[in-house]
Image (cartoon, rainbow, N blue to C red; front, top):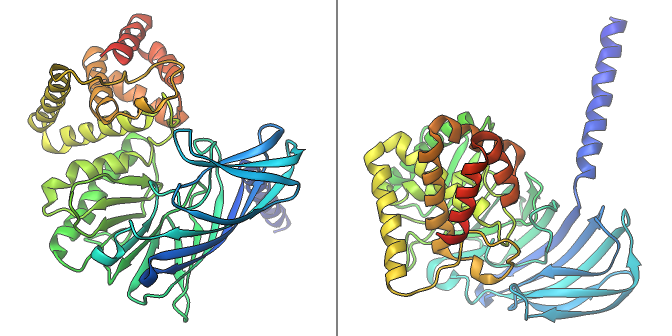
Length: 423
């Protein structure tokens, strides 16, 4: 009995040590109150942004921050000044310090600001979306590497709005929401939907959230998510079970863009299951493929997710469906070339400008290059390559090419480098 108690104490101690080590990998936390006055089409945010374990000593902080957000004040110790930089690719706020912020110090920055909601579709469509493409709070520029925990108190003046997020959501008796991180990340999403319904299909861990209409379709989407997720988990040794899919109400482009976070993704509501299959496969792939830096290496995120969606089509719908999409992608690229339009290379070493964020480069050319690589090295080698790349969470093209050299040799690397730069 004494031995068992001693062993239990050792296990508990190890758990505390591992927990402490995991905490050290975090770069801080974000705590905020968010008041959403949906009827007035505005929101007010007071936010405490704690930065820990910085990589280097610095005299300033830079955060991506949407141009439309109105700053009331920014406070932090040793504050010299702050200003908006609207020249760079993404609008940002620069905070200058009187004294240097040293490595391993802690900084707490208070932001107070207002957000106009006039472009967020509340009046016409009944939802407020504070998510990926709306930098509704300051996002640290090391977003591909830095991870933060989030703790948000959210209030709204419309009782019909329910809140969903990539964090846990709890609602109190007064109707206010508390949102906390599930997975530490560089941001957190708040999606408020008017009079929503939740569909699970045959799966208690899958939630499809949207309008109450067309319940059979949304149950089918929940079952589709489970089917795709099981295969992705098998391929990449994953353990994802719980997934929340948010459907925006039908807007002008029902199959418009989506985005994904760990265990959570957003799409526009479809009219039929066939219209959403590929998008679901792409967004689920981002549970593994979301590491590429937002520069020249963006294709590591988007092209790999697109290619994995193609593999999902091939597995469940067959070669004919797969080859049809491949042909359409080649035809689209060729048409653009014939029209004389310039499409940037999928990868240009050293290039950081906006032209690399090309839809055709990332979703067409990049995916086609991976398709060609599969044809060149064979399906088994390609899957081994993908599995190792996912396991190592590669973020750069050089890391991918190193793995490719290991699996397929230098000649294949040279060929793919040429395609990445000159396709």
